[in-house]
Image 1 (cartoon, rainbow, N blue to C red):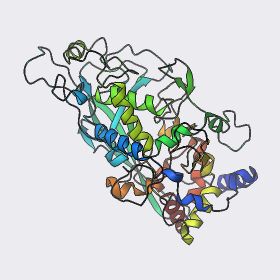
Image 2: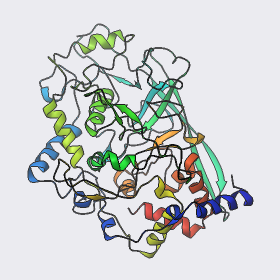
Image 3: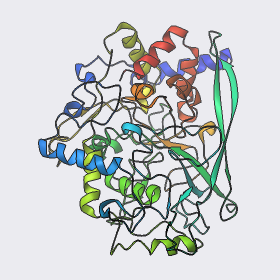
Image 4: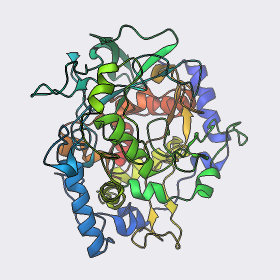
Amino acid sequence: MRVSGCLWLLAWLSLFTGGCSRTEVPEFSQAEWQPGGKMTHKRLSKRSYVFAGQAASKQQQLDFWTGFSLFRDPWVIAPSSTKDRDGLGPLFNARSCIACHSDGSRGKMSQSGESLPTSLVLRVGSTTIANYANNHAYGGQIQPRAIRFNQGEAQHKPQGEAWLQLDESVERSSFADGENYQLTRPHYQLTKMAFGPLPEQVTVSPRLSPNIYGVGLLDAISEQDLLQQEDIADSDKDGISAKYNRVLDVITGELLIGRFGLKAKQPSLKQQIAAAFRDDIGITNNLFTEESCTQQQVNCQRAAKIGGHSSVEIPDKLLNLVVSFNRLLGVPPARDLEQKEVQHGRALFYQSGCHLCHTPSYDIAEDYPDAAIAGQKIWPYTDLALHDMGTDLADGMLEFDAFGQEWRTPPLWGIGLQADIVGEQRLLHDGRARSVSEAILWHGGEAEQSRQYFIQLNQAERQALVRFVNSI
């Protein structure tokens, strides 16, 4: 679907009349080679993202690898002799964190057909009420798996909630220079639903597990630096309306800006991890003390009482070790940045306006509490804000202040290594894009102008832009 010559001319002119902030290309900085500052990995690896940042102290590195063991190893059904990692379920998506975050990256995309998804989480929410109380049987997330009792402890066993039917259709179009491209549009349907259909105005939103390397650095960006980017009414007329989700801090009860989750639903790294333990693995903790069983899931509630834990299933000591592992995960070094083609792609990245949402860099405060993270200049290429991405990417679901077409800007650092580390490169909220080029072509809404800029580039220019994104 090409833009007509007149429409494209208007879009092109608007790029260069919106002020120098949209198109100015900053001078290349040697700091760009180290996206995480001193929390960048010591050396480049194409096998894993799981390395502590260089600035981590020896004690922090011990905590890092201890936390990694809790992140990596599978949880088991309680009661068990393995008290430090029992309590799985009763309902769950995966048995371990690493099952959804392969080597610190995204998990594998679900295949077409009917399956029990793992990395592709199916969120459930309202299309009309931002913070509604779930009054149906499925809660806030489809958990396709349930624990099995081998010794008859439960007469009535819990049920996995549903399966996923994933179908795909192909859409074809061409760039302005005549080169053809095709996109694969996913179609999702729940099957084998244990408690009947969802009510009207309740929908399902597929979310592919995000990358987790560098999240400690994202958690450390000052709120003031983020809010300086908020421009809900587009007062500077650059076509970008950055908005921060205001979400609940479950410890203090305050509304804070969201940073984590594909719609920025969680305000802090610790709360994001605690929520994932409860929702994805069925492990209660002191932030989320109740199992995710709904009132209608009587067998789930019965099974939850069998485990034998006197309080929560992961105590603060162990939860904090997992948080330390995530916080200290470094970022891979950039690659090939001084090559001519990559530098050309860098210029096109800025000239296209990609940087207006994918904010290149931040300076973390010198007085940040963790000395390993304090004072770093980082290059994540995200504003962590919500943006309208258009109808093609809309899920229709409301989450706090996030509307159905809005998604949090994902960081770009390190994504060029996904194909080597995971075996595939999957981008966007549901993993539909199989390359950087496809991801750009799915952009709409506030990013439509940048998308059209990309379509008008010639093949060499498109390749240069994509190579830059895969190098940072």
